[in-house]
Image (cartoon, rainbow over all chains, first blue to last red; front, top):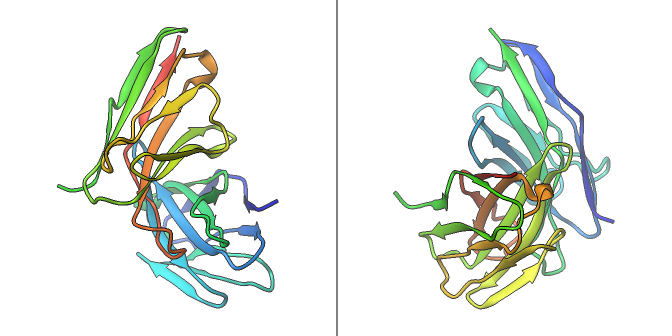
Length: 113
Length: 114
C-alpha cells in the first residue's frame, strides 16, 4: 500500500552543520509531497511542498526535491540553528480524488550550540 | 486572529467516561480532520469531514464519534474512554481537495485516561 518512510531519529547536530533527513515514499499515481515541522508543545506547521516530479520546495533555508526516479523527498539545510530543533514529518497527499495524507513517523532533530 | 482552536489543551479523564474534544476553525475550510499522535506511530487519521454533515472514518475510528453540524466546528467524542486512547489529538483543516494544499493544524489536546 501507500506509505512514507523516514529515517529514524533522533538526529543530533552541532550548530551550523549540514542537515539531511531522508524520506522515501510508495504511492500509486503522482502524489504531492510535504514536509511539516512540529516545535515542542505545538501542532504541525507546513514547512515546504512539491507537487510534481523535479519540483523543489524551499522555505526558511530548508529545501527538498521531488525525485520520482528514486521516490524520495529528502529534507536538507545547509546550516542548522538551535531554533531548528523540532520533529520533522514527511507526508504525501494521494491522487485519485482523495484528500487524505499519509505521514511518516517523524524525525526528531536536536541542534546543539 | 483567525486559525484553528482546539480545546481543552490538556484533559485528564477516568476510564469509562465520555469526553469531547473541540475544534473550531475560522477560515470556512471545507475539509477537517482528527489525528492522534503516538510515539512510534506518528500521526494516524481518526475521522475526517468533507463538508458540514459529511463525515467518514479514517484509519483508527473505533471508540470515537464525530459530528459536523456547522462548517467551522468538528468535535471529537470518546464515548467511553479507555487507557489506550491516551494520546495527543490534533485537529486540522484544508481548503479543498486540490493536491497542492497543505493542512493547517491546531495546537493539539493532550488527553490522559486514568
